[in-house]
Image (cartoon, rainbow, N blue to C red; front, side, top):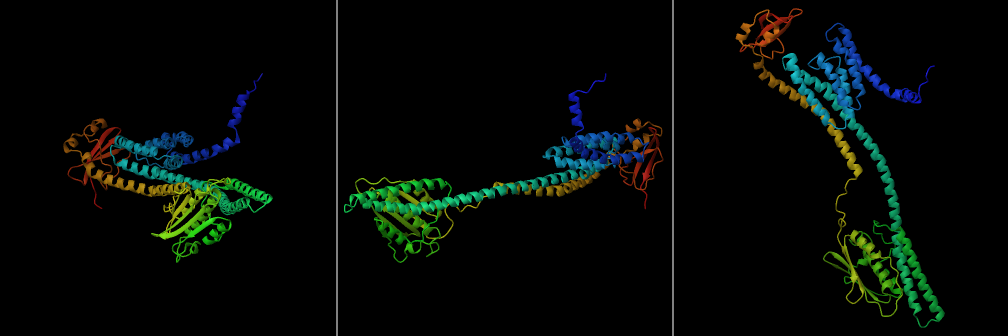
Length: 541
C-alpha cells in the first residue's frame, strides 16, 4: 500500500512551489542566463581547445555568483575572476568581461561601506603580480591586468556606488518632504495655539485691569458712611463679584497661556495720559511725571512715532498698565507715582506705589504671571526690568528701554538650520562627492598606472638581459628546465619589431642584448626542448 506524504512534507513542497517565491527568483535566473551567453559563445568558437573546460566550468561558478550576489557581493565579484585568470593572466577575456562588469556594478549598489571593496581590489591587484610573474615570466601583462581591473570592475563599482547614493538622496528627499509636511502642520497648530494664548494675554491685561478698577470703586462705596446699609452691602457684593470674576478670568487664561508664548501687543489704542486718567477716575491716586515736556513719550508710544523703536511704545504702555493693576489689587488706596524720563540714550520708566494705608484690605487675587509676562515684553523690546519692594514699604517696577533701533536682545544670532535641512544637505554633499569620485578616481588611477609603466620600462631592461657567455652555452636539444637555469627569470614582453612569427607548434621567448637595444636573443622550444637559438634584429620599414 502506497504511503501518503506527511503534512510537513506537503508544507515544504508548497513553500518551494509558491508563485510569489518563484517570481522572486526569476530576476536571478534571468541574470544567470545573461551572464552565461559570453562563455557559451567562447566555448563554441573553439570546442576542442585546451581552455574549453575552464570556460564550461564558468556556468556553475556564475550560478554561485548570482546566488550570493545579495548576501556577499564581493564573493560574487571574486568568482568570475578565477576562470578569467585561467583563460588569460591579463584578466581580460571575452568570456567573463560582462560578468565582471555586472557583478561589480551590483556590488557597488548593494554595499553600504566602501572600505571592504577597496581592500578587495587592492588584494586582487597585488595578487596579479605573482600570477603574471610565474605564468608569463614578465610583469608587463600585470599592467594590462590592472587596466582591466580598473575599467571593467572598479569603474562599474563606482557607478554602482553613485547609483546607491543617488537613490538614498531621493529616498531622503521624500522622507524629509513628509517630515516637513508634518512639521508645517505642527507649526500651524502651534501658531494657532500661540495666537489663542496671545488673545488670552490681551484679555487678561485689559479685562483684569478693568475688573481691578471696578473692585476698587466698589470697595470705596462699601466704606462710604453716607450710603445706607443695604447699598453698602450691595457694593460689597459687587466687589466680591468683581473679585470672583477676576479669579475665574485668571483660571481660564491660565489654561490658554503657554510657557513659550511671546509678549502680547497692547489691546487698547490709548495714550499714557488716558490710561492714568482712567485709573484716577476709578479712585486711585496717580501722579504722572514727565520732566521733558518737549519730547513726551506718551506722544511716541505708538510704534514708529517720534523715532522710538516699534516695541518700546507698547512696552511702556504695558508696564504702566500692569503696575497700576498690581497697585490696585495689592495696595488699594495707596498713592502711585509714574515717572518717565530720557537719559543717556535710554528711556527710563518707573512706577512706584506707596505702602497701603493701615486697616483691613480686600484680599487680592493674583495669578503670579504678570511680572513674568512684563519682563518678557521688556526683554523683547531690548530693555531690562527690575521690580521689588520700595524703601518706604511700597513696591517699585522700573524698566530701561532703548531709544535707538537695532536687533532685539537675544535675537542677534543667525537662525540655525533644522535637522531636516542638515540631513538633506549632508545627502547632497555625499552624492556630489560620489560623482566626483566616479570621475576622478579612474582618471587618477589611470595616470598612476601610466607613470608606473614608465618607471618599470626604465628599470626592467636589466632584468631581461641574457649575457653572451650563457647564450653560448645553450645548445639545441637541451631540455627547457636546463635552459631555464641559464637564462634570466624575466624575458621580453614582445619580440623586436618585424620579427617573423614562429612555426606552428613552436613557442619562442626573447631576451635583451646589452648594450644593443635593436636586437634580442631568440630561443624557440618545441615539445619541451630547445630547437633554435638566434639573434632577432628589428627590421626597418
